[in-house]
Image 1 (cartoon, rainbow, N blue to C red):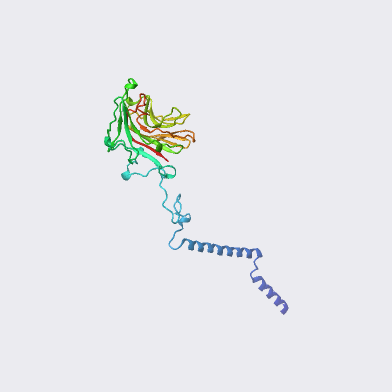
Image 2: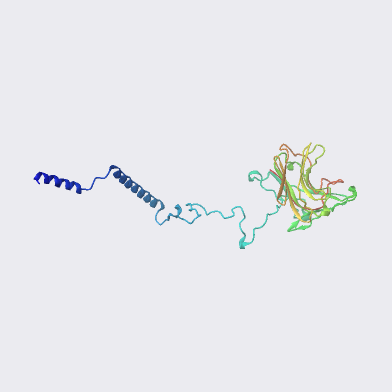
Length: 322
């Protein structure tokens, strides 16, 4: 073999032993893989900075199943019964609803009444006719031998009226408490509340038994009244204009020998009655205005016969105008 041929064979051998060149598509795949690894390393570095030293990655989904990561600065999670009352100390069940005491409550927006009176009768016979503020006094009015007494109730006293009379109306004992200032307790169309606590037995009921009243529903007058209706002894709230009478009777009896708190509320076009916290409502005209020259009366509408005399005991009578 000549020199020239040996040189060609050597060149061919060197070319056959060298690594073949990679295709273009394989070189591009390696480039994308390198870029992806770099991006992943950047994300991991960012997470480490965000979690901070000494922190755990459980907040990102590594916690126990069914639990959520706590939010920084958030308050403790609510209890399992957010709408129920908290248990009493010692594990005893929470107390039941409180019976209203008869005192005026805040008006719309939490405001106090502009005018209010409350008669607790806790001073007994010596100051039984004074309201709690000592401003709006009551006087005792009687007929046919009627009397008013002041039996003990708790730490104070209530007022007791003559027993139920079934004889000739003119001969029946009658007794009421009557105010002196008529104008201050006219609510007009304003929101107002009135009521009291009553103690009656089945023997105390009758055709009508007035608890508290201002005005009359006859002769073109206006009125608000709380009374105990009929032998069933069901309380009712009454509003009257010069033309119409609106009455709301509660479907429960209070003539069972126990004390009951009853409240009437007029708020716009809604009249409601609450008996020991249970409320019933009906609609009345929002334009109904109650203004009259009659005084506030407790226990009856007057001292004439057929006066809707109350029999039993009354306490915590109030009127609140907002």
